[in-house]
Length: 112
Length: 116
Image (cartoon, rainbow over all chains, first blue to last red; front, side, top):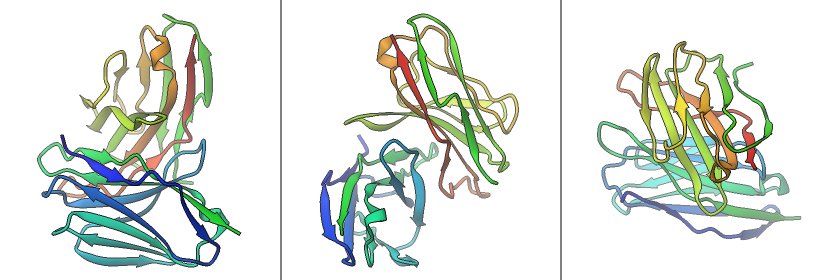
């Protein structure tokens, strides 16, 4: 069973701090990795995707991928209360069906 | 505005009464998918479609039907709803590159379905 694991949290950080969210995956052949943000009762919203090892930055968000260790992380710099949400990690498995495997999400609370 | 439009947003129905949840996207995306989201179970894929007239089962297809007659529309049909189909449903679409790689979903606003 191919899996994506996330700590459910809640992860609590003070406003202005760096929030670090982690995700591990079991399928070593996975190629594409996504981070989504979901506010309570709302639909998931794509934050970033990353395909290659290393870091990818977009504003206050940085995605980090380490395929050898099979983890992908999301860093949120200068965290704001508006960042309080559940963050979902999703991974596309290897193989022809290119199935998207979802983690259950990490709940982030940014405290003013 | 680029978007995925789902209707209705909320629906309460009775067991066995056929219903359709509509989904339409205006981004010319090839790939469309239906998910249900339940507490503790996360997002589970019901059906997906790689293009017009091409649909396939996801992880939890039992009790659902879909069709893809046009590129923009991907309705979800519950022929005989049951209480265990009470859930939050999302439609999503994504472009595909030449290799079939996703660029990430755009989700609809969701449909909260209650079957009594």
